[in-house]
Each structure stands twice: as structure tokens, then as C-alpha cells.
Length: 377
Image (cartoon, rainbow, N blue to C red; front, side, top):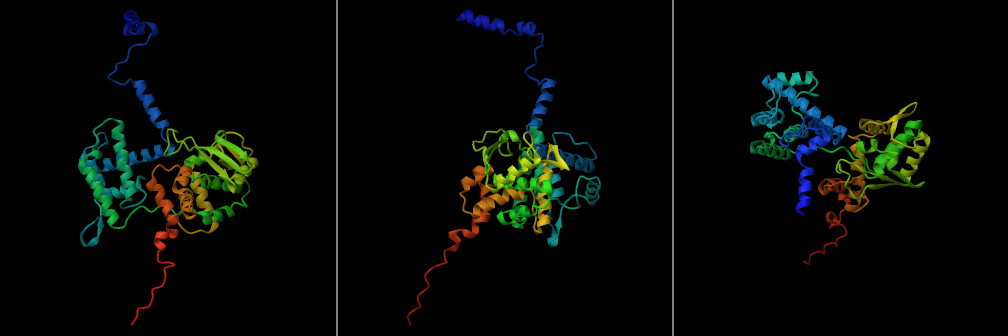
């Protein structure tokens, strides 16, 4: 035993290993410069393109606001008072006589709009502000810097702000759901559009019927993960999603059946696609490159307009519409979540409840009740 240990120690002696490999030993207390680049690249690869764009946009806004507010370049770590100032600059409060106010000076507000960092004057939505604060927090965490967002003053202010907005009845309103009836109105517009119409019909049905796929999930769909069972049934293996970025989910096969399968088969036949991306750009003929996520939103918006629908619809309306329709048709929540991939029951239940609320027996207890007997005089 002792001889074996001696051989291991000799074989793993740092000096001996350096001679074997010709590579200098690293310092275990610091990360090598090349390793820093590799870690950064892996972080980026592990994020969706939408997330990367969203984070970059938020940090650019922080940098622009900080330079205008403090006449200096933004560096980490950011002091706690700066985060508090950012919040009160962008969050509306009820001032005297019920007037709404926020602390961002009008000149700076105008400069941010003029330079393209803001879309309009005035306070942004609460969700926008909290997202930007969250991105700043993540930036500190990744740099292993003292995180000002976790400071008790910042956390308490954010909590109070959320409560104030809720008491005013101000909350983010979800996009209108594309349930079965409005979806069929969109599909009806795809009959006279040639190859584009065939693609759009297949895309809408693929996204909706397979469980309300997100934009990025639709545009990343590839033939290698599509299994044809028969003319009326496909299985799509969803190996990566927003809520399962490590590909660890058990319910990865998403069925595409009936009219959705027929539409998908028609698109594959018309386009001649046998490998690579399923949904692609069309420039007279089918292009090689896949659609961008923004194109899915544009397709939904265009079809909504052609169908003459009114309301605030977007690509997410396909996802919320599927879950809402599942509630309407009394599909069990767990069964619907297995297709959508929702991790949060609370989030899924919000849409599922929207569809089922009018059919709940608990709200209908008075219907069919026996009439009251007249009182005896």
C-alpha cells in the first residue's frame, strides 16, 4: 500500500508533471486569463440570444443614466445610494394633490429619449425598472462584487413600490390570449398566401397545439428532433426551453396531432425541407436560414390584422391561449403543464383559471337551487 502511495505522489509531483507536459503550473488562487475568456464564452452560450440582448440593453441604459446623472462612467460595484436614486428617478409616486411624480430631471429624461436609450418621456413601466435593477444585481453577482441590490434599504423600497402599485390597481397586463376561436380566425387568413400562408399556418398550429411554444422554441425547431408517427401525428423532442435550459425535463416529447400535424406535413412537403430548421424565411423560395424570434411576433401581428381582430395580441398570445383554452375545456392543469413546460404552478394556474373561471361550480351554487317556499301568514 505504501509503495503504491509513493508511486502516486511521484507521478503527481508538480515538478514532474511540468516536465511531462511542458506546461507551467497555474496559480490556484487566481483564474488564468484564458480561463476567464472561456468562462465568459460559456456564460454567453448558455444564455438565449433574447436574454443577452435584454441584459445588454439594460446595462447600456444604466451606463447612460449614470453618466448623465453623475457625470462619470459607471463602474462596479455601484454604491447603494445610486440604486436608490435610480429607483426614485424611474418610479412614479403620488405627490401632493394626487399628482404623479418621479425624480428624473426633465432635461436628463429628454436626453435619454433623444439618444435612443428611452422610447418616451416619463416613468417607464414597473416591470422595466425591476428588470434593470435585476440585471444590475446579476452583473455584481457574476463579478463577485458586493451587491447593492441585496441591501436591505433597496429590497424594502422595491417591496413597498410593488405594494403601492398594487394598491393603485396598476399591474402588468398579459397579452390577450389566442384561444381556439381567434386562432381559427388567424388560420383562415393563411389560405391565399401561397408558400408564406402554408408556412404561417403550420407555424401557428405547431406553436399552439404542441403546448404554446415560445418564439425562440419555434425558431430553434429542427428536423432532427421531429419524429413522424403517421400523417396525423408527429412528436417533437423539445430538448431546451426557457424553464429547462439544462435539458433535464422528463416530458420532452410534445405531440403535434390532427390539423396541426396535417399543416406541418403540408409545409414540409411544399418547402422540401428534410433537415435543419423547420421554419425559415421565404424570399420567393425557401431560404436556408431559420426565422428570427422577432419574426414569429410579426407573423402573429400580421395575421391578427388580416383577420380583423381587435385586442393586444403578440407571440405570447399563442402560449397563454393554449393554457386558457385548456382551462375552458376542463383539461387537468397537470396535463396542460406537461405540454407547456411551466415550472410554476402559480403562473400556469393564472392562465388556466382565466379559461375555467366561468365554468366553476363554486361560482354557480345558486343556479338550480330550490325556490323558497312562501311564508305562512
